[in-house]
Image 1: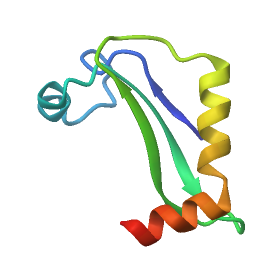
Image 2 (image 1 turned 90 degrees about the vertical axis):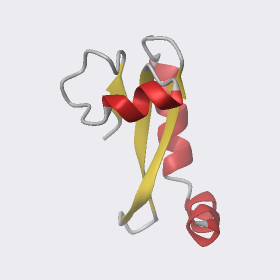
Image 3 (image 1 turned 135 degrees about the vertical axis):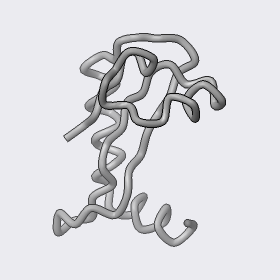
Image 4 (image 1 turned 90 degrees about the horizontal axis):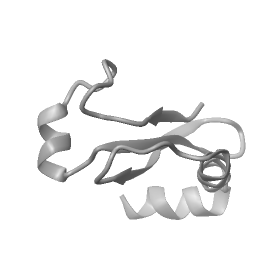
Length: 79
């Protein structure tokens, strides 16, 4: 499931606000990287410098990328 954080500074799920401040992150959309058999291999996230909402389109697009087996295989090999 995607994780959507519209304001990192106020979201109680965020444990490393110091890192977010250093990296200038204020909002995040994170999806699992999942290979064809459903095995999670990591996470793919986008971060913005301003608090914001993410659209359904943003979430669906990043989810499609996170489930794209050839892309995941390439990303895992590069890590």
